[in-house]
Amino acid sequence: MNETIDFESTVSENRVNIPGRIRRELDIDDGDRLRWQIEDDGVLRVCVVQQRSGTFSDFDGYDGDGDTDVETEHDAWGVNVS
Picture 1 (cartoon, rainbow, N blue to C red):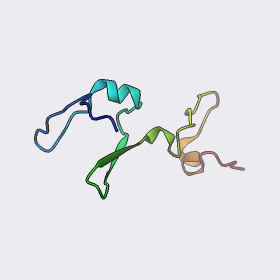
Picture 2 (picture 1 turned 180 degrees about the horizontal axis):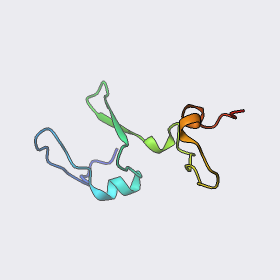
Picture 3 (picture 1 turned 180 degrees about the vertical axis):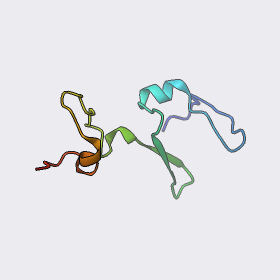
């Protein structure tokens, strides 16, 4: 384990900033979650849970090429309505 201090942050009002270099290296972005775990030897482990890999991560949205009737199609998005 590296014993040198690479980065240091100060806790203020129970909040702490993640240094920019760490955010960039780990690709941490708004909406991501940090999962905290204390190991048996007292070491703190933090895992990044990226929200960009959720249910709608591949959804690009409606491209607007077709007309819609919101009143009849509202609850049938993505379903063939006959």
